[in-house]
Image 1 (cartoon, rainbow, N blue to C red):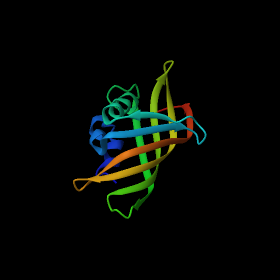
Image 2 (image 1 turned 45 degrees about the horizontal axis):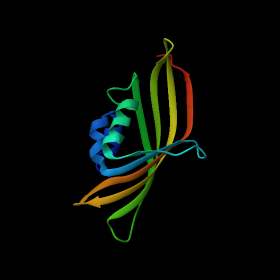
Image 3 (image 1 turned 120 degrees about the horizontal axis):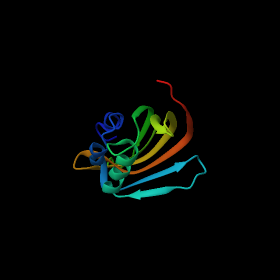
Length: 138
């Protein structure tokens, strides 16, 4: 598991998340278990996608991530691993002049690689298992 991964995610530091991925990493995402899988290839494109959704260029007024239930399995070569983690990601956005809260229940399926003694994400499948929207009354 890359060092500081979840700490950076919760702070919406999209650029700070870049170094957690290999240069040639692939981020996959899908809505629901049967949804179409979309790919974002390369660290630079992944960071740009994070910026648009939860970073400084995002329209989200607030972002919160609660992460947990992580399992990692180290391969026999001790240089690669796979992992699964779960997240509840909550965003507040303005829709037609009203604040709306979206809560996403997410499963990450990761492939990790160890390079020069540090762990990086090589491939991540982000599956939005459930996504709920409701009015937000702060």
